[in-house]
Image (cartoon, rainbow, N blue to C red; front, top):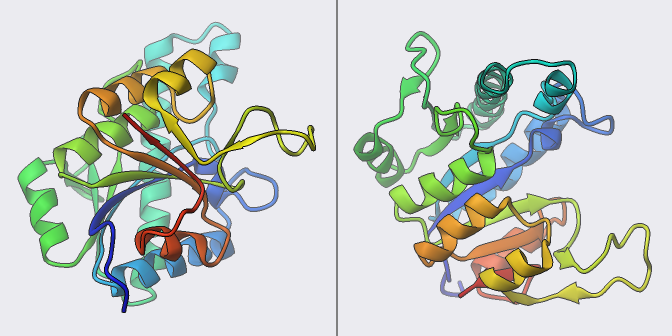
Length: 238
């Protein structure tokens, strides 16, 4: 077997990844499909941590447009990420993958409180760790939570899972002439305002030299190829 390029990864999923064709709610088939891909990676001996968004259950922007307090909207989003984390945990454990959900907001009846050393220990024991509750603070996105947790657990890369095969200079679905980038710097992403992750997350990755790999999780071979060091998707580094 080819040597692995990354042995500990942080997988960033959007909430819409669980939403199926509509992008809303939790689609059991989609959860199982994602769980299958994570299982394949775990069986390669890679430590896997996951941060998942909440866009399939709650969009804070809609609340803000109606005058909702920003902190309230963000806390609702954090709670929704825990629901998604539990759904993904269930899909993984039904496939025999030991999983732990850790929440930045304490809710001991359904998730462990986030403690960095405990999270690392779970990974060392071969468990998949799903981080829910964002950073535990309003005004920070799940992108930033992914960058933060990846740094804390000494991940070697943040893998941003999308439904396109990398980062383009325009929407490839609307513009057939859109150019795909194979490599970018953090500064490129910030200056070009490319929608890789939000600026806070990009800056945090830049300050900690944390690579970001954007790829199509729904391509059956992309994630495995990336872990073996093949050129897949778009790599953002210093």
